[in-house]
Length: 431
Image (tube, rainbow, N blue to C red):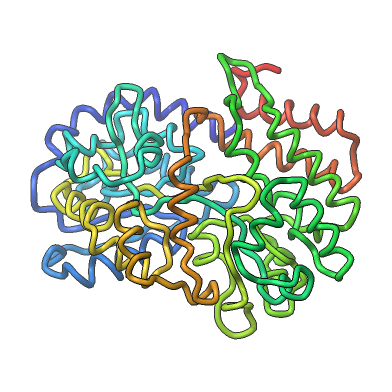
């Protein structure tokens, strides 16, 4: 049994112990606000759009960001350990807020170590009324309690190099490029043209994974049986073809090779992306291709990731938590400010519609307004197939198939390796 499963089981077993101090968590007077994060994204949003605008709210309070990278599950392991010790921790050491991602949200949401946003923290239904329903569904527990909120919505599309589009396709206009890649057959045809011109359609093996995985009709697990949706098989088939024909650069997401493809001298035509990806993960500034990118819907709509903030049971700063959650995720003016200044796709269709009417432009995208695309793709997002096994299955399928894409194993062996690795991670599952 892996460390992840051991910790997860312990957390479930000890979850009831957190109930004992949830009821007293609304008292005022906490001197330290401890926030667990995995990168600089939320600290930046907090400092730029909450702390700077609400200095009095934090008078006498020290804010600590406890940052642990996501790699090798380090962030969750650190968070799990702290939550397990929450009941016995000193007041100034207790977790107050922590961030989670969609793939493992249920691990934390469906337990008592997350505070009920309405009952425990005090937000009202009207406060979150403009937020996308799927962003609320992801952090709603099995009893219907909302356990977190997000300032983001994460509808995706295809971000591509304008200069390469003009050279190969004769236009960089997002509407015209979209017409050329509006389904997967057309997308494949453009990939062949890009190859002929000396460019890669995609960077590597897992670039298109989320565009397929987010459109599955069946969950990764039914009962305790692992299931494979046709969309997963379609991703495997396409990626093998692209790898064999040289339509991709054989890179892995987050690798140096993938990032190099995004630079001004990079040879990658495009990436499947969401707002946080091109705002936070793609290079900006000197040497980058900033301003030479454009955004279109792509072959099919999808969503990818996002960051949610949860209040931790046992916090003595619930009043501050409420104010942070309201300001960053419910207040329309703040959400607009985040969109304009940080480039995030925000969690309010009404706010984005207003910004678009006012002439919103994104400099990274060559002064394009991507908000109509967000609004269209965002309206179709559903998370009804999500399970608590999504993170592990998503990671293991990409890892197992990489060997197949590189020709190290045949397809049957890759599948065997996938099932073996998933069942090792989740021993209660079967093929």
